[in-house]
Image (cartoon, rainbow, N blue to C red; front, side, top):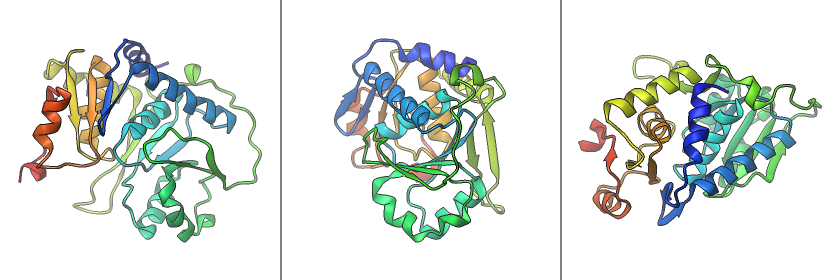
Amino acid sequence: MSTLTKTITKQLERKRQDFIYFEGKYYSNTQAIRDIEKIHTAFRSHNIEPGERIFLSLPNSYGFIIFYLAIVQYGCIAIPADPQLSAHELGNFLTESTPSVGIAPVTSCDLFNELNLTNIPSLKQLFFSKDNEISVNNVVNLSFETKKNPKTSAKNGISEESLALILYTSGTTGHPKEVGLTHHQIYLGGMQVADSQKLTTKDRVYIYMPFFHINAQIVCLWSTCLSGGNIAVSRKFSASHYWQIINDTGSTWASIVPAVVN
C-alpha cells in the first residue's frame, strides 16, 4: 500500500454518521467502506487488475466519490471525464486515454451505442451505474479475451510511484495534454492544502466544482479525506442555494474559483 491508501484507509475507519452529504442525505463512514468493498468485489469478479486505466464519467454525487476512492484504493488509475461529453467528444476521449474499463451512468447507454466501440480496442468492459447508486451489476463485456485472475493484489501492487490519476489540460493553448499523478504526488498535494488551511476532523468541505476538475479532486476531496474531515457535495454550483447548503450542512470551507465569483 502507498502512504496515500494507508492514510485514506485509516481515516475512513473513523466513526461518523455524517461523512458525506448529498441531496438531503448523509452517508456514514461505515456505508462508504461497505460500498467501496462492494466495488472491489465486482472488480475482482471481473478480473480487473491493479494498474488498469478506468474511465469514470459520473456526475457529482456520493456515487462518484465512492467509485473514485475505490478505483485508487484498488490500485487502478482513475480517468475522470465530463459526463456531458457528446458522442464525438466521448469517442475522442476514450481513444486518447485508452482505458480498459469504463464506468458511466446508465442513462448514457444510448450515447455509447452511437460510438463504434471497435475503434476503441483498449476498452474491454463497461459498468453502467444508476443515478447515485453503487450499482455494479450492469456490465457490458466488449472483449472475448479470457483474462486470468489478477496476479497482484491491490495491497501489494501499489507503490508511491504508481499512477493513481490521469487528468487532461484545458486545451486553452493547444490540444489537451494528458497529465498523470502518482500516489505520492496526490498525497503531497492533498496534505499541502490540508496543512496550509489547517484542516482537521472537525471541518466539512463543500464541493460544487465538477469532479473532472483538479480543484474538486486535489484541493477539496483529497485534502479533506487525508485530514479526516467530512464532505458536502452538490451536482453543480447554484448561486441561489450556495449559502443555504453551507448553513444546512455546517460546511466550514469551500474552494472558490474566479468563474464562479464572476
